[in-house]
Amino acid sequence: MKTLGIIPARYQSTRLPAKPLAIIADKPMIQHVYERALSAFDYLVVATDDRRIYDAVIAFGGKVVMTSTGHSTGTNRCLEAYEIVQKEMGDFDVIVNVQGDEPMIQASELESLIALFNRPETEIGTLVKAIETEKELSNTSGCFVTITKQNKALYFSRALIPVLRNIPRSEWLGKHTFYKHIGLYAYRPASLKSFALMEMSSLEIAESLEQNRWLENGGSIHAGFALEESLSVDTPEDLAEVKAIMES
Image 1 (cartoon, rainbow, N blue to C red):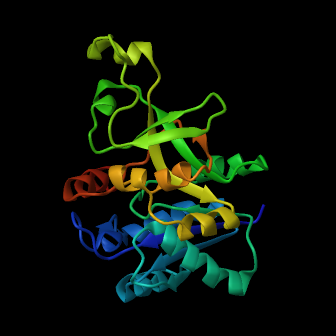
Image 2 (cartoon, one colour):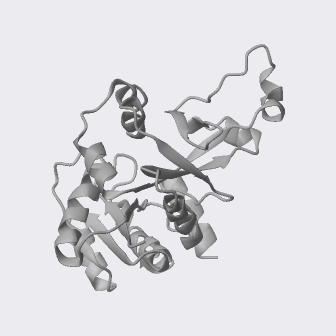
């Protein structure tokens, strides 16, 4: 398979402006993501609408494309980036949306995601992780997912799902396997284009989770299982935690 990794990177962020350029261990965060992800792909590119991020990627020798400022989601930015790269590099079999705010991401995570496409029926792939602790179960900022016996996503929610009726909350972990969503996506080119061109759906709007758009329109998302979860940097506190680990 010919694989393309795309790292969408925006300068503006409500909770942490200029996040991709935050310095961690003497490098901007976007450089850490790029260097860690590089070995997983045939071609890797950053997609940004900001000249400061563009210049930073060029400075460390990475590949980058400028995209429109009008995209509402990372998926739409990925489609534009793919179309730009496609003109120079030709078609790809699998396109991966790599989160630009996970400076400790492992190439092995990306490789396990790509492996889902060894099955011809896979349209879109993502990763999930079994929840192991009460702290994870109570994390209100995460995303939870239910899956079928065939490892396809049923539904994504900001709320903990499913609810175990008539079972004390303290016993839930011992009665059911709950899954958190790891925010990585991979697409076949046709699926990426179809997804990006769909109108926002009611469940997407309700949960503020764009992957529900695909499910609500009858598409399927295959789930792979991650053994570990990379730390995501969304707040100044997250950044301080990652710095403490990576700079120690």
